[in-house]
Length: 205
Image 1 (cartoon, rainbow, N blue to C red):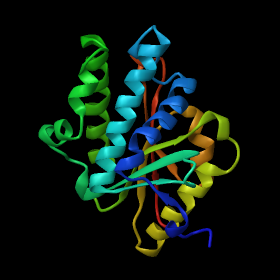
Image 2 (spheres, one colour):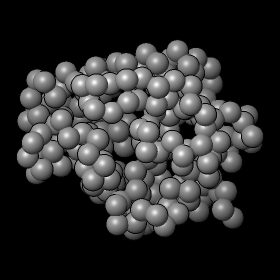
Image 3 (cartoon, rainbow, N blue to C red):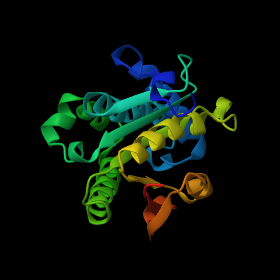
Image 4 (tube, helix red, strand yellow):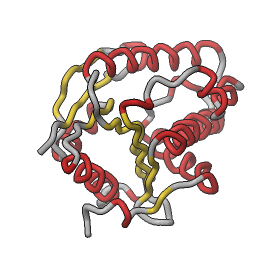
């Protein structure tokens, strides 16, 4: 059955690093974190650490899925009551490793983004909901329906439980998310990143 989370492959501790590599490839090709380094190898290392951190947190407090055991893509979900984690919780899941290498300017930009995203999240979704924390499809598998395979089962479950879903994204993904019923609640200009932050919410269908 299409709308069945049991048909997806569950990421666990043994394959988090591989999931981080897959997501890093996706974000690297999209150039979302080009500010992290002018050297591609250093940028990729930074992205793998950052993506792996998001998956470790999601594995601990929510759910992380791939379409199949081949990990063509990854989706990480967090419930609303697991969003406000302490600095110690981030450190326990590997946040300090991110601080090694990229430099103070990169970390400041990352923290500004994180703080702004957190503030806006609380503003737009201060009620029970699910958060799509991270969605990434390996570039070699993009366009083959893997995003749909990852998103639809969770959205079906949320509809059954009368829960909305919230996310942040970039302009290039708006049409895709609108296809799944998400609506733009705010667009935030971020000239220092050369891209805007689009905040979206999907209410129950």
